[in-house]
Amino acid sequence: MGFLVLLWVCGLIATAVWWVGIGLEQWSVSYGDQPGEFESLRRRASVALLVAALAATAGPALIALVAFQLRLVRTAVVFLVLTVVIAVPAVPFAVLAGRDLDPAPAVTTPGAPGHCVEHSGGDTRCPGG
Picture 1 (cartoon, rainbow, N blue to C red):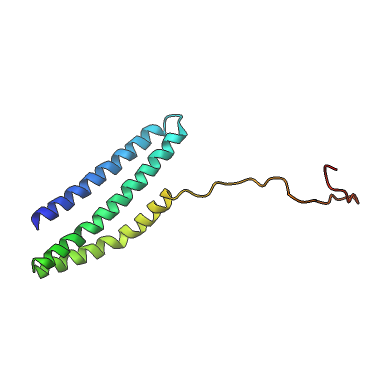
Picture 2: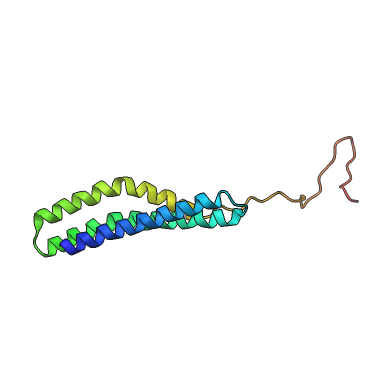
């Protein structure tokens, strides 16, 4: 059990360091003149946040499952409660990060109409002939 808890905590620390590193890269890029690179870093930050939310909630759930298998009921209950407590704030963060990964549809400008449009002033001819 101790090894699983240590592995979970190390995973949380690793994802936090990864996310902070991306934030520092965004800070340095914000002083540059390459807007495409900033969007790439934003996407990487969203992925890191999703991984952190997954690690934060899946870790205690896995530990609880192993504890139930080993018949460590109190330990399993503690980690199940910890899973719920962590999942409550982690799920909204994961949803927001998932929205950032799903790009919004491109804005389209309307083109010329595909049918005859009558002009004002009594002219009933179609434009262009």
